[in-house]
Figure 1 (cartoon, rainbow, N blue to C red):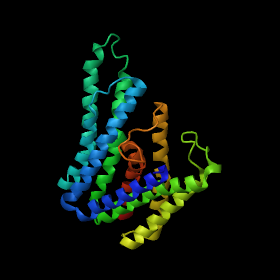
Figure 2: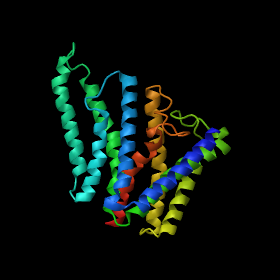
Figure 3: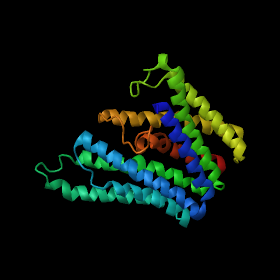
Figure 4: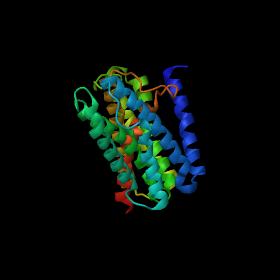
Length: 279
């Protein structure tokens, strides 16, 4: 199976499965979807730790599975109504990391020589993907959350898949404009953005989402542009460590990070825009 066909097949299978979870299993503040987000957070965190090990040859203070506590805290926040539980969890995990470094950093032959790297990498690993992805779960705070989940996923994934299609079929002569990902093309970039906005508007109309046309256009444009930034920053991270793919768990689409890169950067923006439009 060609790379394009494999990618299309995996995407066209994965999106309906996610929509089934969202619309048919909304019980307990969308616990099923929160579990999916948490599992992918753990997989993505494990890949980030692998990349960190390759690049810096040091181990962060916190095991990778600690990153999964953050989306769990986000779900608990919406389920219990306790505000800022996600942020409290992030801060406590950072404090634990700092405390470990205070006592463990002095035990090396050259005390604290790697402390800046260790603290920075711990902080980065907790935020990317843990804290960023937690904003997907935070969307639970709004009414008709299933519709907003569908809007978010379809808008972001459509940018990814249509950028790939347009780039593969029509963009061969416009590649190389971004060094972080030389195979990406101007045609793919424009095609992905326009397709994403169209899918966003179509989803809004079909599901009767409680936003006006200006708000939905802002969301469509903001998510499509941010999705590209998320995709490219992951390419930068992998290039920094000279890693081609973060993993190989999904045929045609690489590892967890290769599939989460756009979502995790778009999620905070989506949540904050909804807070502005719906308050």
